[in-house]
Amino acid sequence: MTSPVIDVATFGETMAALRADGPVRLGGAMRLSAGGAESTVAIGLARLGHRSRWTGLVGDDETGELVLRTLRAEGVDVAHARTDLRGPTGLMLLEQRIGDLTRVIYHRAGSAASFLSPEDVLPALDPLPKILHVTGITPALGPGPAAAVRAAVECGARVCLDVNYRSRLWGREQAAQTLRPLVPYLAVVVASDDELDLLAPASATTEEDRVAALLAAGVAEVVVKRGSAGASAYTAEETAHRPARPVRVADVVGAGDAFVAGYLSGLLDGLDLTGRLDRATATGAFAVASSGDWEGLPTRRELALLDSMPGSTLR
Image (cartoon, rainbow, N blue to C red):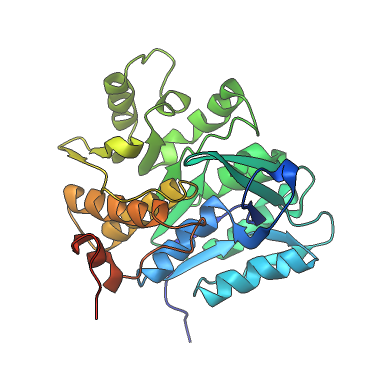
């Protein structure tokens, strides 16, 4: 019997995540979970009722088992994910230093995920998913992961790229040289307002020019995340802007990935541009209002909770 088509397939590195109650240098309690941009998107989509798949390599260790167990428990298809003996599962430490400012410390050089190759990823894209989601994090992990991203976006699927620039993994010039050649294969681009230059031609110097250049290159939708100022989405025919949903901030890590999950959910459901942004800002709000990359992401029935009066008790 043929398996149902996956709605969104994604791949990359998911790490063990240790969140400290205070400064890491002082020691103290830490909470262990799993975290990664692509897996957060996959979990967010699964909670909203979509079929999502995550593919990647984890180490043959207990934290690798944690990653796979977490994703399975959240309803994400991990049939093509596997353990690899060449490196350990990556690790990230997170500490909140000033208010809601979070500092992330990576231990991912030489991790299992750094050995990812096209051969690990392409079988997970057969049959083609409705949407392939990739990020600019994966090609920063090394030549193999970069080749995997390039091969995947060329497979013929409808591709969404979230730039997701990580300055601790590579420089802006290297990122631009790697990501710009992907533009002809992209249907949806998601970027913060300070990341558009990593995809648009160097001759485009303003946001308006960069968005126009990407649309002219064949990108169907350009979505710009603006943090607390909300988000904008552009197509050749229309433009939409939506404010951020007001919530008390607990943890901003993972908010951008939650936003992407909401936007892709709206796209799969056939919502218009404004409706897609509304769902994206809602899922982003759930993320910042709770601790953890993905733990607070909503189910479809919970999306309406943001419309409840502050301080309400639902009985």
